Structures are given as structure tokens and as C-alpha cells.
Image (cartoon, rainbow, N blue to C red):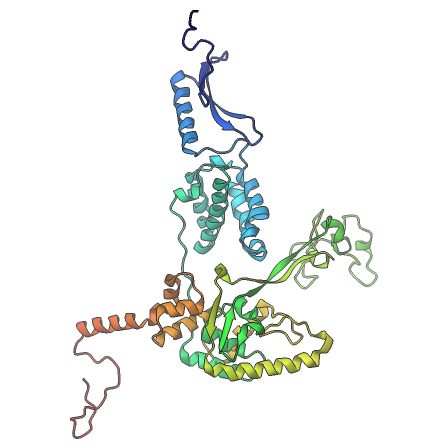
Amino acid sequence: MSEKPRGSGRRKPNLRSSIYLGRDGSWHGYVSMGLGSDGRPDRRHREGATEAEVTAKVRELEGKRDAGKTSRPGRVPTVAKWMRTYLTDIAPLRVGQGTIDSTYRPKTERWIIPKLGRHRLDRLYPEHLYAFYTSLRDEGLAPNTIVQVHRILSRALTIAVRQELISRNPCTLIDAPQPEEPESETLTAAEARALLRLTAGRRNGTRWSVALALGLRQNEALGLRRSYVDLDRAVMHVHWQIKRERYRHGCEDPHACGERLHFYPCPANCPKARRTSGRKHTCWKPCPPGCTEHGGKCPDFCKPGCTRHAKACPKRKGGWKFTRPKGNRKRTVPIPAQLIPPLRQHFADQDAGKEAAGDNWQDWDLVWCEPDGRPIDPHDDWDEWKALVAEAGIMKDARLHDARHTSGTLLGEQHVDLHVIQRILGHAQVSTTRIYTDPTDPLTREAVGRIGSALWPDADDGRKAEPRPDDAKGEQVTP
């Protein structure tokens, strides 16, 4: 029995590509990539004017396939579509909703989507990003804002790579924008003492004692609960912080839910707008340019299909929420002995206020709270800090976060080890702690003192001279 010629009627091996000349006069190539998500074969097409051109394209695609660097089958989404998917479904798993609403979404909708949104993810190249960041800089955005935009975009593209939508993240192929360290107005020890004298005996005055002594972040301080403060052992467990997330509708039809609160301008032929009856009009109209009718603040009209007014939704989501500290870094901090009596007195006063409030008391178990037990609004907390700084006569535009810088600086001036300061402040990296303590680091001061002595050995260093024991007349002799 004769044997069949080799190759005749035999099946080609799996993943073998095919190249042929089509009836349209162009060369075509098909590359087998495996199976798609629906279980069907995934074959990718390449086209060219010559066989050599298509062969090169096919080999390039085969190389990506074999290296595992190809995208998944199906249409790759645009940057706009993916960014909205990322913010809605993926980012909330790691980032608080408040951060998404206040930082991620505004920067995405304001900058990323209008300038990059039309690009397909797999066709977003480094040159597009360079042009993007240059345009942001030309429009006057602060360097730190550009860095935030870059980090949001880069994180979203990293997830796209993990989900095999694209094979590489173009944000990692460029020189990333560099942030600028914000100027801080650290208080001196004398200024800190003046502020503490001012707050002594005031309601919630210990809030500022703890801020300057232990450097708690604002949300950590406002979310510190009494059950996490052990005055007998003189420690506080900074395991939680409190944040207020924007309210969101929990109902099925947000527009219908807020129907009674929708606020629309009068139509052009509104009869009520023409009735004066001693008043200019009895319903709202769009404000003309330069309008001062409403005290310079024109009404914020609802748009058609408005889904706002989530605060009035009976199934609303959001509001005050306890979350873990930044980076999920819980820590236990010792309390200075001098702070124990004021904190005991503060708790006694708070218990008296709770009894006086009766049924109006909202028990959040907070160390510092409003007179009815509610959490303190961060904006009110900020305003109180600024008022205290001004009242204490401190001629600095100190931010509330500068109280944290002050704590780190004062600890450094007391020759506290850098790693101990890191644990007290809850920093992930000691390099961050150096930003708080470098100006007064004992080793830095000693090094500068040595170079000063080497360059000016005979100069007076400005320190008060000590009398020498062998000086019979007791005169001050400069060493």
C-alpha cells in the first residue's frame, strides 16, 4: 500500500499562522492566539502590500503572543470608557469614596477625559502623555496637581494591564512629573507653648495638646474614640480615623427621589416672572451677567435629569464613616504624663455634658466632639485652628497640618531617634519623617557646627561664654 505524500491531507500544528495573497491584491496574515473568553478560537488579522511586510507583522504578533504580552480578544475600550469603569467599579475597593469624589473623579473628568479620552487604551503612546502633561503645565496647573493626575491615570492603566486589556502601561515608559514639597510653617517651642496656654481650660482644648505633642493627623484626631484611650497605661491606640463621604442615592430612581427638591429656572414666557405685585418676580429666572439680585450668588439650578439631593434620599449612602488610618498603619502612641490630668478632666466634663444633653446626645464614643456628641466637621476644626493661631499672636500662616510638622520637629530637637519619631507619627518610610525633622536633626546640627569651626576657628559662634575655673577674677573668657 502506497504511502501518502508528506503534508498531503495532514492537519497543521496548533497556533500555526497563515499568510496568503487575497483577491483584493493585498497580502493577509492570520495569527492563532488561542481561545477567547467565549471559548471560540481567537485569530488576529494583519494586512500589507507585500508578503515580506505581512510576514514581519505576523512574526511580531507571534512574539508578543509567546511572551504573554498581547491584549485580550475583543474591542479595547477608550481611555474615557476605561477611566469611568475604573472609578466606578475598581478604585472604591482600595480608595475611600470621599477621595474618589473629591480628587479622583474631578481630575479625571476635568483633565484626563477631555484631553486623552478618545484614544484607545492600546493606542495611547508616551508622546501623547508628554503632550498631555505639557498642556497641563501651560494651563497653569501646579506641579503637585499634575503629579496627582499622573498617578490616577497610571494606576488605572496598571489595572488595565493586569486585566490583559493592554500589554504595557505607557505611564511607566516616560519620565513622570515631579512633585514640589509644600512650604510648611512649623511653630517654635515658644509659639507652641503660647497656643497651649491659650487653649488650656477650653472645651476640647486637649485636641490641640495632642496635635502638637503626638502629631495625629486631623482625621485620626477627630476619629479617636474614648475606648481606644487608656489613661491608666498612658497610651492611645490610633487604629481608626473618621471621614465624611458624600451622600449618594441608594434608591432605584435618583431623579424621581429628589423631585420635590429640583430647582429649575423660569421659561422665557413664564407668566409668574412678569407679575410684580410689589416684588420683582415670584419664581426664579436665570440670572443675567452681573446680577446682584440674590446677593451676588445666583441660584444653582438643576439640570434636566438631575440626580442630586442624595442627602434627602431615605436610602441614602455615605456620611460619617470610620476607616483605618492612612496606609492601614495602626499604631499605639504613649501619652505624655503631663497630658493625663487634662484628659481626665476633659472626659469628666464630657460626661457631664452627655448627662445634660439627655436624649439629644448622639453617642459616637469620640474623644472630641460637638456638644451633642456628633463628630466635629473638619472645616470647623480648621477654622478653629486658624483662629487660635491668630489669637495667640503667631505671625505665621500655619496650616493645621503644620501642627504635625511641629510635633516631628520638636521631637527631633529633643534628640529623639528618627525611627522612634517615624513610629509616633505613623509614617510608612523614614524618608518622609526626615522631611519633618531634617532642619533640627542633631546630627545635621553637629555636622554644620564642625564645618563652621573648621572654616572660622577664631570667630565668635554667638553663644554665651562660660567662666573658666582658673580665672581668679571670674571674668568671662571666650573659648
